[in-house]
Length: 423
Image 1 (cartoon, rainbow, N blue to C red):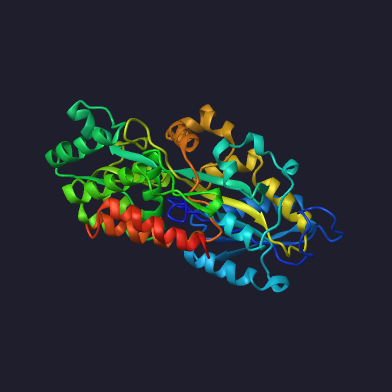
Image 2 (spheres, one colour):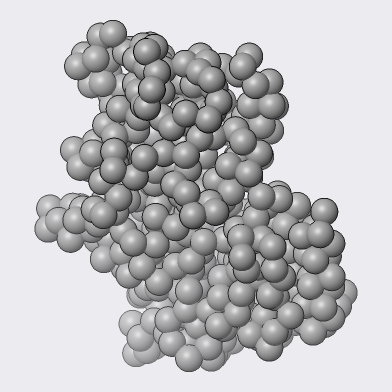
């Protein structure tokens, strides 16, 4: 998954699919005489080609449960639409195991499309702690974390070194450096993903969370956004555009556009997913060797990022639920999680891999990413998440373009989110 649908996908969005049918209500791998058999594994945009070798390893070891790879569209929105359409078909669904964006778990669970999973079949205690929350809904485990992600602040370490200043830890330091240092070096100050799409929802949530606020509570049943913290967070973003240290062009940026602006040497600071660090640091990049990464700043110190990544879930109508659960256990095992990182450049959910000396030498951002994931939080949980995201991105974009004040934006958010919750 590109981390988060944004981002979740600032990184790649994966979807796992397994064909067939079993009566609804059973837990995966429990009470099914036909629990094992061939599987179909679908993915949205396996751009690095890492899945083929992983599935070949499974197929060699499980000849009676072979997996066939099927790719869905690269776009997370298109993947979501295709999955939802198929799953609404009930027993006719060809989707059995789903690798879903982390913020789709409540929606799919509430709709009855995916089944609860037995916690004891999966090594949840070996995962980074925050990722576990993305896989639950209403107290039940409905998915198993597969890959994770959190936003980082990328910066031009050569520029800051020339100025004799450390990377910013607070919003005030970020603003000051973006206003003063960036122009001296012919750079724009700061950018994120500010086009009105899922990426802006992520950036807005990070700003609100970093200021100590929330957007929804009780898994979407309660609206909590009307707060001083939310006004401060949205105000930080709106002020940046108004004062010019966020360039107006950034209002059109998604992940790739913002990454390219930084990689081309046009930005001092960039909020993006770790993949942007990898690409910008690669041989041939104009800023190779000049890129640093730190956790996102907040008002008084490190802020709170938003978790990206994907979870593996089993369709309610899976024909081979035991094989589905076994495949999930395989994909979340330590050896395979290591390959998810080394072959796919996707952040794994296994905590120990972030402290592996060999991996840290190869991927020097891992300690910073671990710190960011541990401080990160889920996007607002709601069975109507798509509607929630559309409201957040539209209202925050209006605030950033100066069409309303941050205070008015928060009041509007509260009203429109309450209307969604009441449906």
